[in-house]
Structure formats: structure tokens, C-alpha cells
Figure: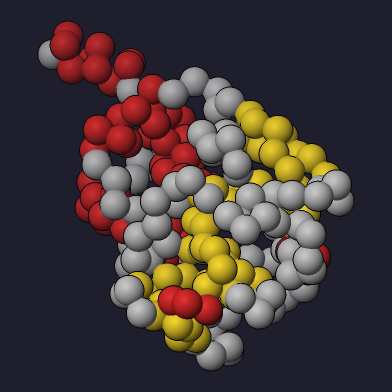
Length: 217
């Protein structure tokens, strides 16, 4: 009984929810976005639902946690590390409006920031010296991203099916999509806005592609 009480003191309501928030951020999603990806009600992880109307702490269920880990391809060990992390370190990264990203001179051939028109922002560390941030403008990517949201892009992070990505075509078009499937010849991309059509590109038409690892939602 004493051991159980000690365990309860070591693992707090705040730590568990903070770890879930960090899990979502690592995947470039908001808590509601993570819930949707996990096949749950979009409000499952909302901050407003973490305390019941009568003031009691509401903990995430084992089932919802398991689905969140599966949706982000994360292990329980990763989640434990997120519980134990202290304050997230910040990293100064180059910042550019997404609307400008298609113009020449902002990226080199590898998809790394280039030129002098970039601003700067202090955002959660992406553990990638080439990471950069893009500011969303307009509503073309709603409901995933809204006007004013900032996304952190990491060229050095491996990309898997289901990840949200930024890519530039050989014709200079910059796209923000979800990677559905990737082969040696083609990339199948899902639009973030359900009203927009999905895209399929020849691999030779992609100049570079990078993973979104955090969003400011």
C-alpha cells in the first residue's frame, strides 16, 4: 500500500497530460489533431476536459494513451521520457512566411534555409541544426493549420507514411501535405483541407521534402 502511494506521488496528473502534449508536438499536431489521428473523439485530449465540472482530475484512459502512441509510432519508453523531461529547450530557428517559400533564393538545393530574408524565432528544439519555421497564412489548410500558425520543419528527421511534410517541386511550388505513400517513382500526398484534391507527384519532380515536427496550435 505504501509503495502504491509513493508511485502516485511520483506520477502526477500534470506530468501525464504534459507528456501527451509533447507527444502531439513531436508529431507536428495539436492535442485534438492527435486524438483524430488516433481514431478518438477530437476533444478527448482537449485541455478543457482534463478537469471535470466538479473539479476532479480526469486522467487519459489506457486505451486512449495506447492509441495515441500507435498513431505517432512511439513506444511506451518514449512516453516515459516525455514525462520525465524538464522544461523543453528552445532553439533559435530561421522563420519565413510560407507564402514566400516558393520564391527563389530562400532555400538551397538540399532544402536548407538560404539568403538574408529569413527572420528568427525561438521555438521548441528540433534537434536539427537545419530546422526552420514557416508561418501559415490564409485558410487553405484548415482545419489542420490556421492563419498565423507556425510549423517547425526538420530536413534531417526521417519521414514515414502518415507524416505531415513540406516539399518543393522542381517547378518551384511549395506544398504542405500528408505523405500517404512513397515509392521510388512516385509520392502520394493527402491534402490537409478535405475540400482540396490529393496529389500524386513523380519522384523526379520533387526537389526536396522535409518533415513537420512541431506546430504552434
